[in-house]
Length: 519
Image (tube, rainbow, N blue to C red; front, side):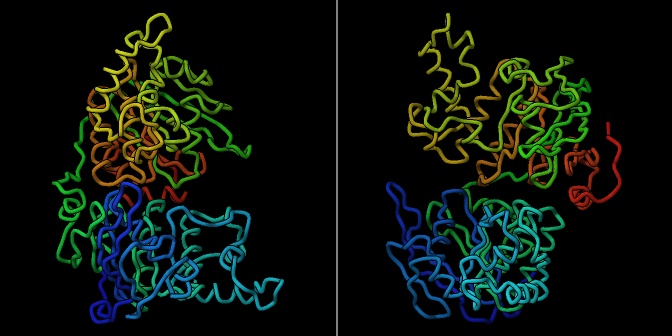
C-alpha cells in the first residue's frame, strides 16, 4: 500500500458534484459525485460503458456536463475545453498517445506553447526544464530523441512530462499500464508514488488491472451503468470485491487450467522470416510448434514482430524465408482462403479494420468466413433460413448484444465485436489452429472473463491456440508455454508454470541469454 500521510489530511484537488451527461439513448453519467485529494492516487474503475471515460472527459473539458458542478481547490469552475483544464492545472495522458513520431521529445512537449523567441522555438530552455522534471520524478527520457526511436514506456513518460511541463497538479491517466513491460510498470508505480508525495492528485481510470489498483492506490471509486456504486479506501477492499461491484455479480478472476494431453504438433513454424511495412526485418528466424489442445503465448512489447507473425501465419503477409506447417502440410505463402481451408482461424488485433466489415450487418459478418459451407448455401446460393438459424444460435450462445442481426456491426461495443469474431472463428468445422491477438484488450472484466473461458473451451476440444497478447496476466493465465519475442527473434520458450514474471519481463526488453525451448 502506498497511501501517504498527506493523502489523508490534504484538501480536495478536485470535486465533481451531481455530474450528469447523456447522449442519444444513453445516460453516460447519472448524478455522479467524485473527488480527489492532493497527494492521493485515486483509481476510477468500471466496465466499458460504465461512464468513467465520459466523467474524465468532462473534467478535462472534452465534454460539458448537462448538470452538475466542478470545484478545483475548492473553487467552482467552468471547463469548456482542454485549454481551460490545462490552465486549471489538469493534465491528461490518453491510452493512445498524442505524439508526432517524426518530432523530437522536446518538440512534442512544447508543441502548441508560446516561445520567448517567437517565431523560433526556444528549445534550449525547454530541454533544461524537461531535464529538471525528468530528474525530479525519475522520468528518464532523452529530450533530443525522435519519438519513433524510443520505447512505448518512454513515450508514456513523454506524455506525463508534457502534462507536468504545462503545470499539471491533477494528472489523469487512461489505462496507464496496458502497454508496459513488468519492469516499466514498477517504474511507473514509483513515479506516481513520488508525484503523490509531492502533492499531485493522480487519477488512473482502468477497466480490469485490479492487482495494480490494489498495489498503488489510496482510494477507489467504482462506476456501473453511469452511476457511482462505491468509493472505498483501498486497504478496506480486495480484487474480488472490486470485480463484483464493477460487474454486479460474482466474477471468477482465475481461469481454469487444462493439462495438455497430446504432443502431436498441429502448427509448426520453422526459421520464419518476414519484413515489415517499412521494408525492414520484422521476423528473424522464428521457430516454434504448438500441440493439439495447447496454448502457446507470445509475450513481447508491441512492435517486436508480433503483428507480422500473425499476418504471415494467416496469409496476410508474405514470408521471405522459412516454413509454416499445419498438420504436416506446408501452407507457407498460400492464399488466405486456402490457409483458412487448411484449418487456421484468426481473431486479429484490429477488430474493425481486419476482423469485420463495419457497414455489413451482424448476420453477414457472422458468415464471412464460411458463407460457402454446404449447410448455409446450395449451388452457390445462400440459404437464408439456414443462415438465420445459424446466426441466431451464435448470438445466443456467445451473448452478443446487438439491436438485431441486420444491424451494422459498427454499432456494437468492443466486447461484442470480439464475441462476434470468436463466435464466427471458433465454430468453423475444420478449425485446427486459432491465431488470436490481444483478445481482451480494451475489454471490461465481464467480457474478459467470457473471452478467456471461450478460449479454454476451445483448448478442451483439441484446438491449438497461438495467443499473442500484451497483457502478461493473460499470457500467464491461459498459456501452457510462453515464447518471448524481441526484435523479431524468439528469446526463449518457457513452461508457463515455471516462468517468473520478472524473467519474462527482462527477456521482453532483450536482456539475458537465449533460452532453450521447453518441450
